[in-house]
Image (cartoon, rainbow, N blue to C red; front, side, top):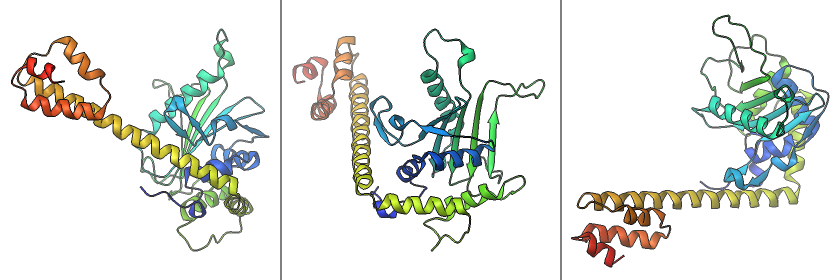
Length: 284
């Protein structure tokens, strides 16, 4: 997929979303709109936002923040329909908990955690602008106070019941920016968002950072493709040999542990032609 030009990025692009949300006041306001609760101030965990994380095998562009009440937040822009968003949410909550609870700490010290997905699609298909989930006791229907909440915002909602005008304006902006010729709204927060994005696009340092992260993601994708091809070759070699011979454990392990693509290709061709295991091993 061709890299989008920096000047063409909108709030729906993960990099630009993370960049504009690095402004604590913008992040605070988005959290308030999404959750419907007052938030006095937030601290952006810059070491986890817009950065390359080797432990995640690539680039993470979701936003991590905490506030004065020690609540923790993870916010992510989603532009393509994801089947497993609830499980992704579960993973994010777990990551926040592991990071927050020190060894030997009491579980009561776990902070309340919020995961927010801002979706350019309807994640559940019911036409709501906001879906909020949390733990509920099946027998009583009562909420369980475990401090875990996930909110899915839908920019393509239809049912406006209970949706504040400010949140509606924000979601319409997410849906329309870059698709409509101009943003026709007088909402001050939306105008501030667009002004902030325009300023980011004038920042040469941010453009260089974007290009660097894009290059890292391309490298990770290429690495993943290469590793997938190697695994497929290994499987093909083993299946080819197994169709004719009983493969000793040591030989199987040697094939599985090989990582050079050229050698695996040669072994696959050899596995097709070899008339015996001895012939195969002698020519490996």
